[in-house]
Length: 157
Image 1 (cartoon, rainbow, N blue to C red):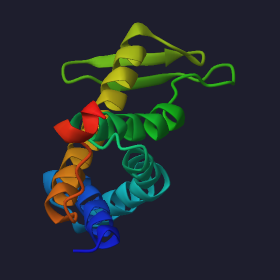
Image 2: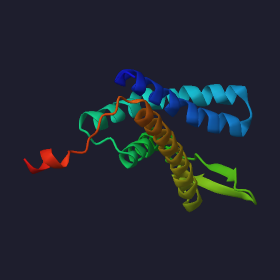
Image 3: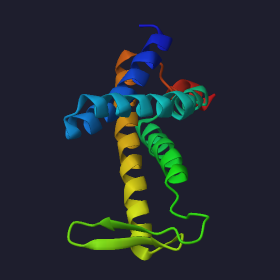
Image 4: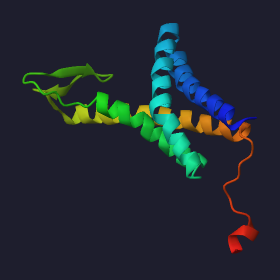
């Protein structure tokens, strides 16, 4: 199989995994579609460039791809959900499963707000890591068999 086709299928797997996990958990077709669009943007703008850089510099290993997937999942989530609000008087309260908890008071996050932020960002990072592992598995099975390990004879020369 052509290497570009293997990369394309790996990217498709990286989009389908989070979309299926999030959409399947909610059992909603609209959530599946939205999750697929968000996953596609992550893959196209962050995941694919990271994957191609790892491939170019011959650093494409399962653990490096998973680490890149975690980072590619964390960055947009961490930036877009940053808990500080610039205006005075902004407060946010949410249900934590047992009671209402203040997450921000006058635009400043509380300890509970920081924990919620860390939990949400870590969850998306985990989703990115799982998607990246799936894409690496797809690529490693479909690629034309490029090996990045030097043979013993070339290593001695």
